[in-house]
Amino acid sequence: MKMDNDADIRLSGVGKTFGRGENAVRAIGDATLDMKRGDFISLLGPSGCGKTTLLRIIAGLEQPTEGEVLVRGRPVWNGEKRSAEATRPISMMFQEARLFPWFTVAENVALPLRLRGVNRAEREERAFALCETVGLKGFERMRPSALSGGMRQRASLARALITGPQVLLLDEPFGALDAMTRDTLNLELMSVCQQARVTTILVTHSITEAAFLSDRVVVLAPRPARITEVVEMPFERPRSLDLQRRTEFQDMLVHLRASLTGDH
Ligand SMILES: Nc1ncnc2c1ncn2[C@@H]1O[C@H](COP(=O)(O)OP(=O)(O)OP(=O)(O)O)[C@@H](O)[C@H]1O
Figure 1 (spheres, rainbow, N blue to C red):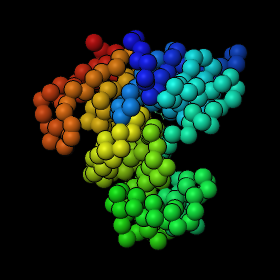
Figure 2: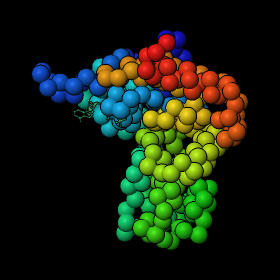
Figure 3: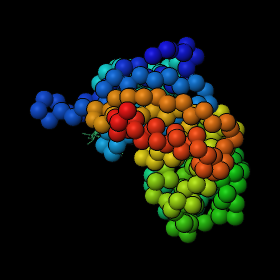
């Protein structure tokens, strides 16, 4: 695979085996991939194929057993040691919102700033501004329990964005939401990522979602996760939901489905 010297994220020969000996589980084998600043890619693969593990390795939450991950030229792992500097530009978002029930929405959104020692006035100003961006204006002082599932994920997206991340790692962030809410949030996500030129990796089970949002879809084969194909999504931006009705989009879904099942 061609390597790009100013890649924002670079995976070279990344592998991961959990456990040892008879109990060893090979979760990822030889993943190699380059992403440029502002790229949006999706990892698409069957359940249990190692997508989450790969995301966790990039985030520095899991140590690879082979290979190297570079974020903006810095290795995420130096042997056993995780580099805080390399992972600083990264934010991650999960399927469940993981908000603290005793904090207000704005306090939850501002939490990463608090951990970085930003003063209260600035935290609040930035949290309120971001709440507006993600459609939570007027809900800033409420507790998460007063919000719908979609609104909680909006809050969780705002929290992921508040540090101004250069890399966003998304593990099925809207997977538990209904289809309409999911479409709306995906459109907003796409626009936020594009405006801020955030390099984004999305883990998803949805072929349509992957094709709609991404510049490239990385198709993974079942365990151990191997990259079987990297498919360009040649659709112009900005994209609207109308794209999903076009023949070339439908043809792309057929291609991706065949690639996923190894049915070429
Ligand atoms: N900490 C761990 N210890 C042992 N095995 C693990 C651990 N974490 C993950 N695995 C195994 O690695 C494999 C890949 O898991 P992973 O969660 O990355 O898959 P996934 O593609 O994200 O799955 P899904 O789409 O269902 O969320 C699975 O077989 C899982 O059981």
